[in-house]
Amino acid sequence: MEKRRLLLSISALCLAALLSGSLLAPPATAAGGVGRKRRWAGFDYYVLALQWPGTVCRQTSKCCSSNGCCRSHPLKWFTIHGLWPQYSYGGWPSCCRPASFDINKILRLTTILEEYWPSLYCGSSSTCFGGRGPFWVHEWETHGTCGYPEIQDEYDYFSTALYLYSKYNVTKALRKAHIYPRSGRQYLVGHIVAAIDFSFGAMPSIICKNGSVQELRLCFHKDYQPRDCIVEGDNSVNRRNHCPRYVTLPSYKPYAMGNATEGNSNEVNVEHQSYK
Image (cartoon, rainbow, N blue to C red; front, side, top):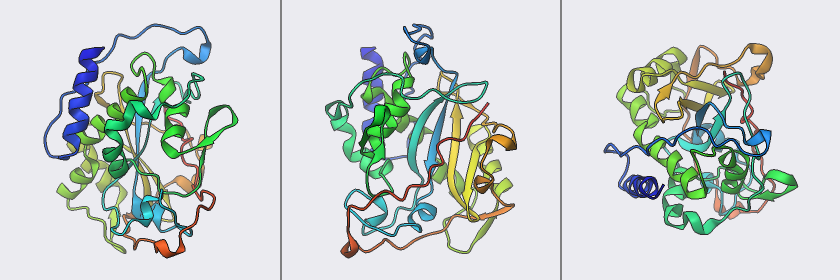
């Protein structure tokens, strides 16, 4: 475990230099170790969900210091939404351990997290067991606690997601395929999917809103190797998340901080998309 933590630490620190070189993979932990409760019984694979800020930030109506959309310079790369354990037969575990979030365990990562895993909303997010808290707390409590035994604690969770984000750089892969964020420029969904498949050897899943890419999701085996993302049948998916044949990757102008407020989150819930 100490060796694994060291490698993850090196990966996270290298990400600051970013996203140019290959990083050492965190060694996969042996499966097993079934917990005392059914909800601790493990999972089958991961989804790394990435957000396109241009689509999300165009919906911003209120600004606050915690909202990445309100920074003086727009975000021009995919940002992390979360790393989500999934079941092969459909569905996902959630809120698996009643553990309080310990920010001290990820202090060395916070600068990198602010850059590549910012909240794109104001207000607090729902957490497990009826609470509310910051975006990172929501992702750790809802999803990170379900990654046991591969993911032991907060540091494992966030550094593993950063490692995958760095190694499988979606923004860079799309640029190589001449797919750039430009307002009004349309791209074939099939072209985007093919570019990711060519770069990483696995098919992604794409979530759209009003004809624009809102999320792009990569899937991984428990040994952190890419696998295809296969969406369940149409009956399980909100049709508003479906993509037309042509989509955009829009740019945006940062919302003025002069309108700053700590208003409620205007987050659109797109987490609950099942895979099999």
